[in-house]
Image 1 (cartoon, one colour):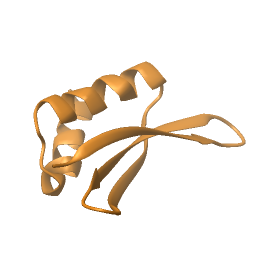
Image 2: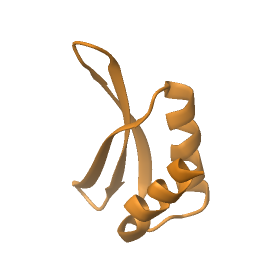
Image 3: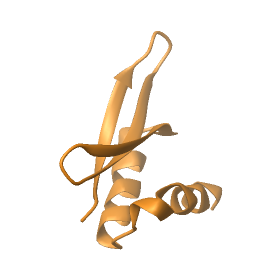
Length: 68
């Protein structure tokens, strides 16, 4: 089962919020700088988790969500 976790990276100009897809023992896929706010990124990660998005569709679904 895939878990979607919000990540935070402090940059010199701004904080970047991303999402990591985690499954298995240590397998991970990261997408950095998903949304401009922590709240929006949490909302997107929750959507991915609640809808059971498979890791192979992670990027496509994220692209579709951000295009709305």
